[in-house]
Length: 537
Image 1 (cartoon, rainbow, N blue to C red):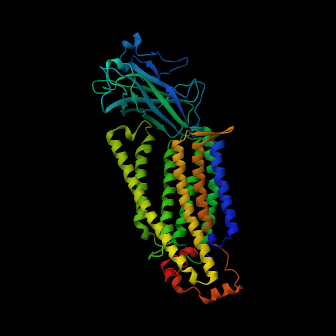
Image 2 (cartoon, rainbow, N blue to C red):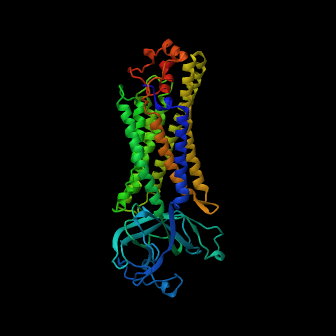
């Protein structure tokens, strides 16, 4: 064998391959910027104040032929004789003459309270608001509503008042933080109805101020973006899966068993394929509320495999690594990845796992849940920081060792020196490519946070958020494909030895038994071998 493809590919072919990857990367960005709409839409609904004197569990509609008896303002004479428990806030999703669709993928609901300041009814510190929430659905405008979920939830109410609390400022509104209400992982029906009640007694909903109105902000993924996103996943799935199968076939037909680096590259390809599988196509016909949980699991599996690959890739190219080709040599780095991933998985199951049976549940709804959530996030963040500190140290060691190897090149024969220069250059290029991919992810994320969501370029509107998502998704697919392709075993044999210089080099200093791995097997690449400790000997 003659090492990996990256070491035997001519510079011209390597440049053509790089141009091919660059074209696909630009195309994946343009798909999101020019074709896909904004990833999500947020629609604001004003809850209708319905009267339910008998406090029954009937479904109250805010509009239509069967609309409920309403009060438009709590200052009306009728409202003044009502008890707070007689009021039900009703919201129909979507707006009149609109329909929801499975293409919307998920639906979130956030509460926004309009609370007026009153000297005799102020909002207390650390107050908790209790919401009796019910959700129903139907698929046509004439059917009866079918109850889907019902839950009584508590949420912290955090409000500020910008001006002094005096009688002169009565009637001004507090500025209250949005309150998460609901998260559904599937939009399988056309119409939804929310009925909310704020039950009041001696201990419940006391000290929450004078509520004037309740707004609900409904957030869902845009159908056009879902179609673009699923199309990209459909294209990348056979591409990456075929590349992974082709890579493993090349590994399996070799005379030696696969080494650790090759196994990790294969695992990276499998995890990318798992991430790409467009299961959402099936969810269009079934009410699969666990799709968001599955997506988190897919992303977690890919990033865990990617982080392990980076550690093994750097570690296997260290000169001073005495025990190569053994996963146990990276036990604490891989342990950090597994530990951090497990913490995030537990956190996700604690939140979205419960949403499968109760979409109104929120881990952030209580002080205890908030503390537990922050603990999970902080512990996972510490694990990530320790991992990246270890990774940066290993990258520095790799470049330092390669620098030491470069100093030995002048003493080598010309043919061997030129070959090693090319190998080391390509290895450095791949390391820098990895850093560029990571940096681009961070840069795009920052732009996505600070931008307005879209830019205008002549007659075109560029969707920055969509371009970020499709561009990053395409970039990591292309990165994995590049790793799989360039580090696949090359089937080229040694070049012709007719040239005098090369012939002298090949016959003058043949490979010794010491340049083999400790198990008597040759490594996957020349860079792998020349950076090994035995190569230094």
